[in-house]
Length: 462
Image 1 (cartoon, rainbow, N blue to C red):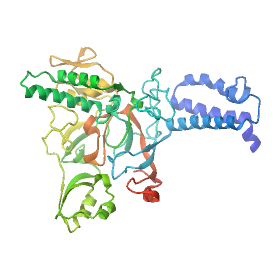
Image 2 (cartoon, helix red, strand yellow; image 1 turned 120 degrees about the horizontal axis):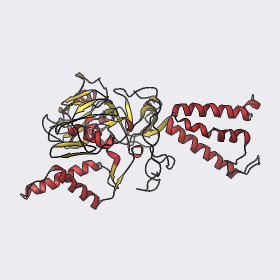
Image 3 (cartoon, rainbow, N blue to C red; image 1 turned 180 degrees about the horizontal axis):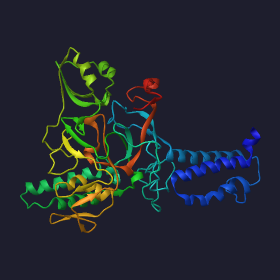
Image 4 (spheres, rainbow, N blue to C red; image 1 turned 30 degrees about the horizontal axis):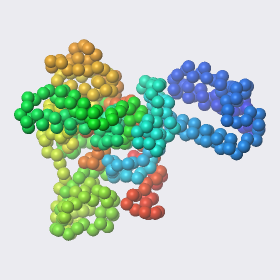
């Protein structure tokens, strides 16, 4: 058996089968032209491909063996990370308590099909910035491939926990990336408009104030752009798939007219009042409320709580009242689609139809804000409005047909999540993978071995 495993033709056959399967999966049959290289590596050996080794020497030095092992490990890990699974860490509380800060998980690329990288020339294991630097790009843009997704084992479904490239991360303010560039742009545009109003100057169009905001940001900061695959990775729950109609009433989400399926750990911010005494920190720890979330001013606490935890706190003798925070209907906030036509906020928005590939929508000045970014930024069309007329690629447009599917993502920690409510749809070419397996969880509020949340180790994610 060992002689068979060492046989060069056996090794070549196994490598050939794997390569052919990968070529079929990728769907680029030009790669077949590279098979003679595989034959030479295993059989003919005319070219010295492993140039770091001494040719014809069976026993290599320890240094060469280490180099050999490192090169193999980097290539293998890169392929696994690109096509199969990728490690991910939960950095914020937006998905609590379904996923916690300090959770380490694996994201399945094959669940929805891995994406071929838009920028294939990049430093191994670095996402967008070189290690030990703050702004040096870890990738080269000499080669940029169009969006292509390989076959996966399923489609994105409602309630899947999904990792995706941040849609508003295509443009960044270097060194000040939170809030995102577009949020900062809207803030400055509003400030310039308010300044004109305060000083009694003639008001200009919203487009002019946007130009002023963009100019100010670019003169005060370094502005950079990122390709899709190098935008920040976000993780949220998919609550709306292509074609769904969403409506939120006082925080209750309705999908196609029906209440969203129950999410046990769904949280909102509640105002908890006591009789003047403090809530026992041990009780808050028992309820798994992180120290960073224990915000209070005297006898008034503002805590992220699930329905179950609300009932637990009500049992405390010093708790007087618990009221859920809610943005009143008709009171506008800076949420998608950022238009005066829509008085939406984080708890009350919609009805909103999620765009679907092949779907045609009517365009006018009222509906345009719902689809403008999808048409322009995600589907690559030149869009402008002149004299109340909409132009797409230089032609008058009264409708638009989408070329991609879109999704609506929200965090389970509803009042502490930057999600689709604040930047809109997630295009299909931004989908990275499905959160599948939790392999470690560390509690930053504890020390030593107590940091490990043993009840969350080696668990499938649902």
